Image (cartoon, rainbow, N blue to C red; front, side):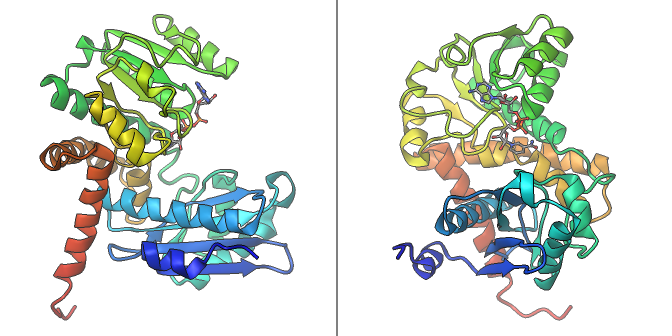
Length: 359
Ligand code: NAD
């Protein structure tokens, strides 16, 4: 018997709902978790993964849903946090029936949860989902690929961090080390080149991505993945995988600002958030600086307009400045300050609904 008690965990982190589903025709097997819907319907992508055991799948779903609550709240969106995980082998299970069956379960939640693509699910899969429910975003022909918008948000976040740290956000005065040049890293580097950054280094493990950058931006310098941390630059920009900042890598960092697109960058939020703070490095909290894609997709729920979405993404700049100030005032690390900021918004909106208003 597993000793993971679902209700204890739900109580501790104040979850609203966990839904388990199994479709006997297609073998679809999954979990939808809704963390908090104070601000609006829970939004979070559908991840398909061959989990080793059911508890791993449930914990992943719970953790990711909670992360979405903070991300949406800090981004100023009227959305709550949710997530779906499907248990299965992506090379085997995916087909029309499978995703339409998922769409029917999403529909059964009657708009309390909105899904989108995530690891191992694509816009094509979401097209099938949309045949059974309207509660799906990130569809082909609507808001499109979120990566350029995520990078644009990160760019505004970098400007905010430079302004806060050095009192000057002129990109041409600074040097950058970008870890990962996949989707978001590529678009971020493109923007930094356009803004005439003083010097840009990057690291990659995918030859195709290295060659693309070398061809398009010959002045951008490629370094080995292990050398990227210790470069003598102003900004370290993590745009690859999670947990890249840990006991081993943080002491190598010479940059005075850390700001990029990657999720869950800190191996341990408390320990490594404090470690970075103690080194007098300004860290832009991941779920705030990388919310551009989410903000973009949110606009699909209204009538999508790229101008409005872009303007909303720009607000990441002001939000980060506010969070940096909270961190300084409270003498806490910036990741923690971002959570304080997000929780405060949820609490405020919850409290103003105390009085009855007829609509
Ligand atoms: P991606 O897979 O397109 O790019 C990641 C790149 O990092 C790949 O090219 C990969 O080869 C490279 N990489 C992996 N390990 C590396 C290492 N050790 N050193 C150097 N490079 C390495 O992914 P992406 O969409 O650009 O996402 C990057 C990060 O940003 C992820 O953490 C993702 O969760 C986060 N994020 C992405 C979006 C989005 O809109 N795509 C939105 C929010 C957050």
